[in-house]
Length: 113
Ligand code: 5GP
Ligand code: ZN
Image (cartoon, rainbow, N blue to C red):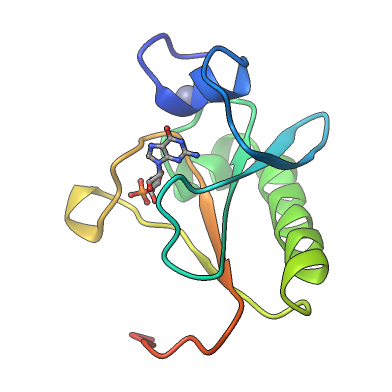
């Protein structure tokens, strides 16, 4: 838990989150400003800054995040989704507690990859 971290505060229940799915190690809640019909954030309960730190420090939890992302997409958008990790401010990261954006529903027009 990091005191000044928005997502740690949501995970602790001190700020409400619109929870979609919770496991012992991972939570999924709706993004407050959705960019697609389905826009859910998949977040480990442990505070690590980004996806590479997660791979290094909590690899089993990162794998569980992938399974949770798939379960959310199975329930909400036919199992088809993009999973986006913004890494660094210039790439759009604004919360430095790793989170995968599950983006789906409808046609996803913009495909930078
Ligand atoms: P990032 O920009 O770091 O990749 O993603 C952070 C995301 O958190 C953004 O999509 C933003 O809309 C979302 N967000 C910011 N504040 C809140 C909040 O208080 N609650 C929820 N559920 N999402 C938030
Ligand atoms: Zn945190």
